[in-house]
Length: 94
Image (cartoon, rainbow, N blue to C red):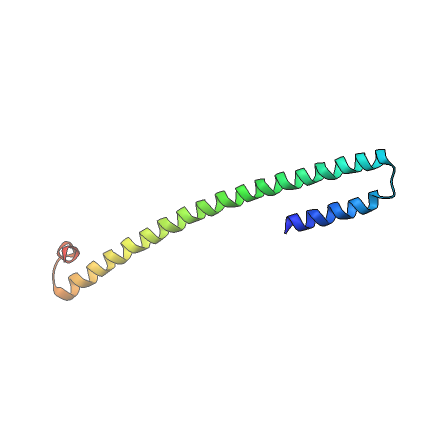
């Protein structure tokens, strides 16, 4: 989407430059090119930031799922121990 917006901005700039002198066109073209480069650099930085945040969130979710699984196993062992009148350790081995 940003490429489409960038292309539209460049096209609009090109049309407005058609009535300008050659030196003004060159200066405006350089300004547009610089702006395009800035937009691209900022988009890349934002993408890298989002990617890092997603990786961190994934690691935290994975840890939470592992902890929930362990807690569920422990609770199941306690219930089994109560039902079968055995120790939690015996229930865990079954």
